Amino acid sequence: YPGAFSYFKGMKVIIWESKLVESIGHIAEPGEVIAIKDKGSVKGILVASLEHDRAVLITEVQENGQLYSGIDFSIKFEVAVGDRFHS
Image (cartoon, rainbow, N blue to C red; front, side, top):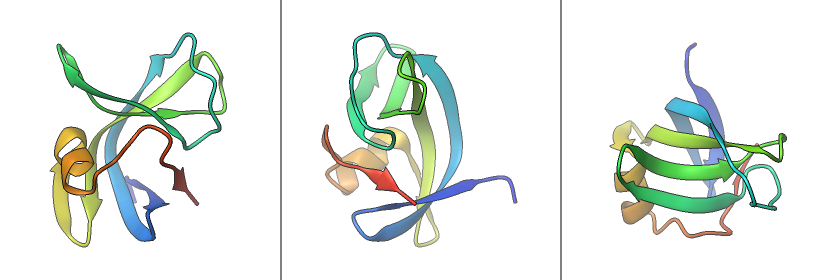
């Protein structure tokens, strides 16, 4: 199935759209939210990856059957820097 799943604040979420982006200067554990990007062409939830010079930008996510843009998800579920997505 094409999406990836993770858990966020105890909720199972399906990540339908994301992309790998450069992330210079962020030191965080994989899965940790390092920024919420809501300006310009880069919009979504920026999450640390195993590669320290790259991060995953989550742009479309589903929770309990409801599809959200990354920004809308971050607002509805009060995503903050330091929060974690985990397996």
